[in-house]
Length: 554
Image 1 (cartoon, rainbow, N blue to C red):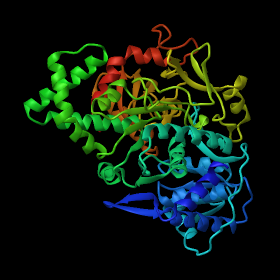
Image 2 (tube, rainbow, N blue to C red):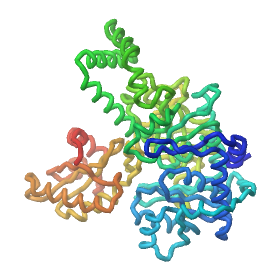
Image 3 (cartoon, one colour):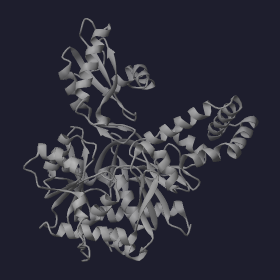
Image 4 (cartoon, rainbow, N blue to C red):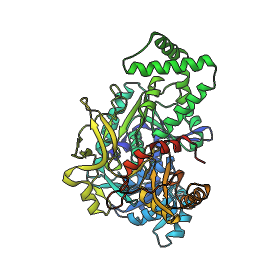
């Protein structure tokens, strides 16, 4: 039985029990398994009338909703290939990916379709999703049985060139991955006798987010979808989850908010918290004091339970974190509160996952052992190489890049890492120039650097920074005579404003530092052919870069 057949079978057996909910305006709007399956069949009937052939691509451009999930299952059930796109991309970026995937159908909201038609008037049929669910007809035929090598989705991800690449994932990739994710969640949940309560706020067009959706539908669970990130804290309390998937950005914000709140309380509370935190960290290093142990004991009795419940309700068993490296300090902070943070490492090309922490035995600062059935090793240059049934068959219509990525029968991740004696992996850096924000967005710096340099001809060089940070910043070197006064800084800001205007939020530059002396070969900051030595520059200007992130961007 394939994962899709398994999902339909489970929905049929679950009947009137809720499976999906949307948090909207302070309320939870639920659909039962039977109602959701009816939506899938309604969407299948609509798709069946379009004259589409198996393997045709269908773009799905929506924020997370129950309709998104129903449409995705319907597309796959008809033997079509889903192309999920991120609603926060610019219209030009979206059209570029659509043209690359050559879809027969685009499903989206009317406001998105209006913008797309302006840029691609000769595009394929474009249908507002509301129309899909207007008709009464339902398709009850069995779902298409997918062979392991049958493509089911194309997920776009940015490469080092800045040009998005379509990662093709097939049924075999997903079948294997869902077995692995379910096994880990079984370990976490044990035998509770009730459905998992899951909260979710990350876009389904991201591979890890999509895998969580499918995992939830293959197990006894109720998945609550966030619909307004501005009310995330309130939605979390409504959902009262057992676990949910995170990016480091959110966890770091929660940690900062908790510490800020503690700092506003009385002196006794502040001292108790600080001593307890210090003792917890010292205990991890094999050192502790009697007074510190007492403070930690007291905090565990009178302070930490309230903090835990305020974060996500009384039933939270664990936070799951992936998409970018999480600082050890943040992971230990939540563990001190009694909330395990389980890390996952992977890429879109590995069906989102390569390693997963064992809930019963995990080591802070590592991302866990490789998943069953998969091999990982290091190349001579320290690059992580991956092989297994979770590795994608190739990039959409990019045979040369596919051959490069899968050279020697191993997927070349572009990440550097190391494995300890217990089999736990630690991610130590990137081989490529790709910047990964701690929100999980991947950004190729070169196109943005070139755009800024074009707007600022007096600048000698431009280099973006921001790996594992919350936003992009720029180092700008100057040959301008007024670089030491405010005039040049004002021109830099104006140029940045122009570059930022058409860019999505995560590709916008939020801070900059002017370097008065250009980078050179002699200073060790350029290669012999004039390319930036990014690591050397980042090390040389580490203090200046750090100061950019201590300031709140405008």
